[in-house]
Image (cartoon, rainbow, N blue to C red; front, top):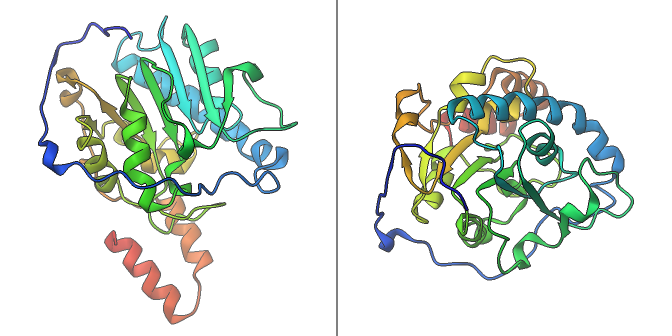
Length: 266
């Protein structure tokens, strides 16, 4: 892995805060009948557009972040974000991990995607930069600490996004707020930065779930990133999701209780 030429200092975290790794179990992203070609096609345009804007913005903050670097994507889907890193931002090598895709068309060469169950992978290949985007909500909570620990190994920078509580979506089983994820990454000696959400919150060209959820975690403390405005890992509800939820949960006492709990960040 390579150095990014930024002013950094090492930060030690209390190892007593580390959570006990969970046993392997199921991940709710292995049903090829649900995650079929139509599913990915329905998301591809918005995901690709979002990836280009977000990754180019991050690269403007951390200059030439991707150029000649190695990038891996844990739960890569059809390789949308990897394709942007490789083609637009000149990453030297890309590797994706996801369940077998069968005849589903991918946006990167098929040999760049390792077919696997993410939970059962012993170690991911080393890479300078790691993506894990809207994946962890598909993983049972008992497995979160173990998978985050594996994601943190052999990498320097992690671009992370996971569905917020009651966000809803195909195969979601454990939606959590940003501070929950921040703690898990800190348990693995990674530093968190919530500086992308303020920069993209009102950008209508980006899918709302990225605007609401995306975070950066780094192995070393990057002092320059502290200079940017931050949402401080607050549990924020994007107006688009709020409008969607008001439609989804119209009527019924339970719907009102769920919506109120969501707004409180529970």
